[in-house]
Length: 302
Length: 152
Image (tube, rainbow over all chains, first blue to last red; front, side, top):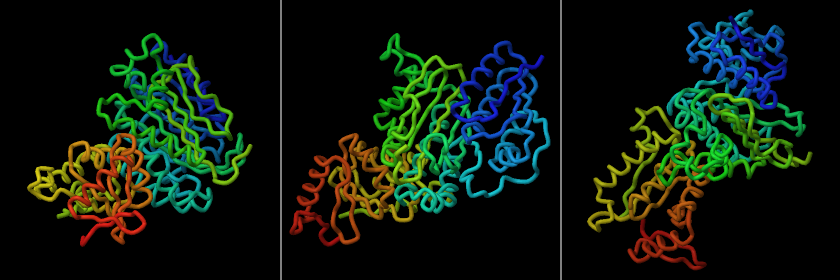
């Protein structure tokens, strides 16, 4: 028997909870999963890396066969998913049905970093090196980012990726793209999306933090501890710099970060966005999914 | 005496010539261990037998992230290196190093090309460093209140 998980037609951080709900429901009885993306019309980098994380979780769930994935049928959607490097990674996680475009992901100007696996420190070096070569000019010209902001961007990207290496207990993926953010901003933005299906923040921080939080301990408390209080699972006094550094960087450039892990999601919400700071009781999803948005500089009044 | 340490060269050496960026904890750890070895070889250990000041030259280093700033600069200070001068740092490096040091009450001195010294990190800790350099006759106060190295 195969269980169906529908991929939202507009797949981004907002529709992710709908996807996570379907995923949680479908994985209850250990059957093979079919991720149905045939009707997909658009997916953000967050949607793409999250779909890979779902495939990763399904693959290691003990079901003998790989999960199935029906590829989008719209040619332009299919082409974008290929350009963004999704299928290169997806072929290792899914049995894919549908006609896939041939060739390598193109060096498109909007895809600053195609979907890239992150498993070890070497991968983070590779990501930082690529983004500096590829993105600096685009960040400066399209987003009017100060040259200091482009250096900070590489730092933020490095720290976001290291979160996988240091805490997930498994590999994950990162993607960076610039696009026009119609939803609340009507400006260009650059988006970093990072996802894994690892142990998640609660599990990672539990040995050192659960006692301190007592009855409040859970996914939301773990996210709050990591992002707001800057705590780390390591007792080393210098730990916890990564997320704190990302926060400082985003505060300076009016950026946003949202982290979803387990059943909770936390966000540092800039004035131009209408997201909520903390949500709990969401459908469970393994690992952690991070979204970072840096808007084009200038007036960000809505 | 001030010992000169070429961080970019140590990074290349530690990564078989592959990396130019100081990113990730593991990379920072390896580079710090190499720096410690170089310092120990020259007696920069606070015993008074060798140089008490090390000039870490970051010229040629690309991006530095917060984790590496902590793993290299802050940990060397926490391990008791007497005094660090940083040379060749970019605005980006500074952005990574400064908050990491400030958060732990630590400081280093950024040596500018003209020899003037720019404190980075905790103001109180930086004031102590400047006092030490003056006491060792390695730095002096300039008219206007800034400090500069003497005969470096």
